[in-house]
Length: 217
Image 1 (cartoon, helix red, strand yellow):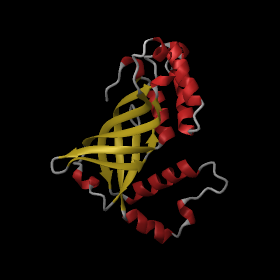
Image 2 (cartoon, one colour):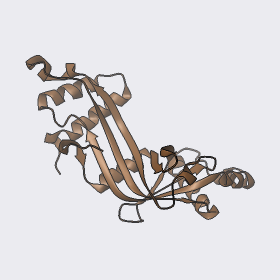
Image 3 (spheres, helix red, strand yellow):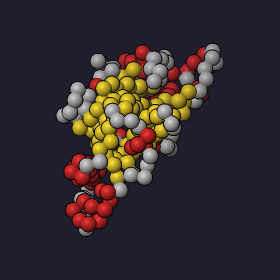
Image 4 (cartoon, helix red, strand yellow):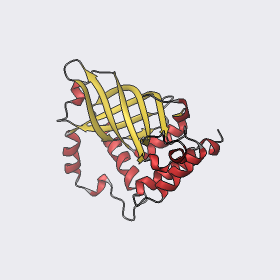
């Protein structure tokens, strides 16, 4: 991923926090027969394993990904966050000299690592319980796999294959107008904050948090 210095996030803990907050990624691998292949899937991060953690998930048995990717293949998981269109009309520089163009602000984290697929009942049982608990926790009436008939859950487990990616490298990019002047950043924050779109307002908060004058690290 191309990451200009101003947009780079190099703190592993911050990137892992982001991965945990998103929980849904795009797994990308390459195979000699099919070239690039991607699967979008929910993932659980286990920070206790390895230097950067391990991502666990599952794919449908009918998904060819688990046999297209060779054993211990290198893989990439892409996690995306808040994003928004940035109009040059918000920049103070537009009135000053007009040499401005539109852009897009966004957050992305790439997790690279060694991939393996796991066809094991115990792994899948533990993984599905962890995945369910991750998203049901805090609900008034949390659902668990024990709420469904045991034979039904057993049948579903046979229809999936486990995924495990040991993270070896992380890349983080917070492209949030850090290369603009304070006046331009103020304009971006004001413009996004006044939007009716909740996603735009979320980006406004990140722009404020990421502006060079606000960083303390």
